[in-house]
Image (cartoon, rainbow, N blue to C red; front, top):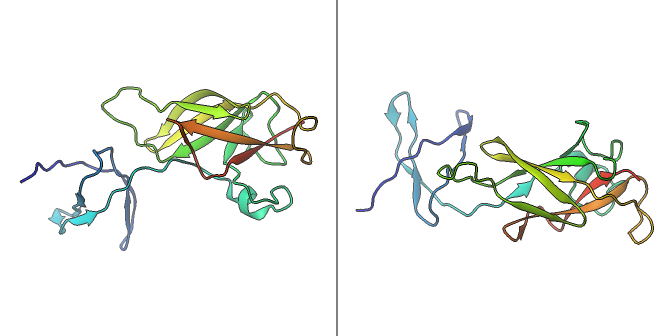
Length: 186
């Protein structure tokens, strides 16, 4: 008989027909079962298949899917905050060289390693300046925007510029792919 390890897992949403929970960091692969206890009564354990994590940037749905004028190629536009707290968008682009914050989910942090946030790097002229855990499931990644202007030597786009962001952790690009675009003023 194998050893049974019990975890108390955080509940994200509960209704009469649905329970959403966050899977804690566990050794993969292994069989996992969830046992629900309601008002002191135990339900039969439910076997839950586990898959490895898939980190992704949160997207700005209105910019990604609804604005075909500023995003005619349907690139993923991450949900991002400019240094002044405004949402990064064509109407509020970030100044060149300023800080923009994006948000990543899908990383499970190892609770046995104190302060062990994932290491990120960026390409396309972006510089990672900081990583903060904003909740048990969300990381804020602060980036310095490239100090370039649209025009000579770059693909021109109407003001503001859209500049590609390639965010990488452990050699793996963080999706959704093929890339994300943020708005930077000229």
